[in-house]
Length: 90
Image (cartoon, rainbow, N blue to C red; front, side, top):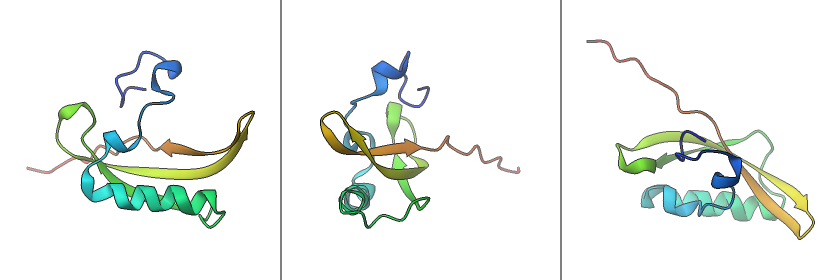
């Protein structure tokens, strides 16, 4: 929720996914969504993508995709692992 600057889960659900990632990562994300819908995405496989959420510097994020059923039919659930804080030595 912090990543998307959302107050609660309802503020983050339904946000346009692609708008939050750099152009260089969008084709890979789209491919992962399509592969997940076709049942070809391996569970537990992570996709590394770059995002500039919040307008700051690009952040590398790990995405996990899974096919989930809902009242309206199947959909792809995307989970974003918390960004890793890399400590740089002087």
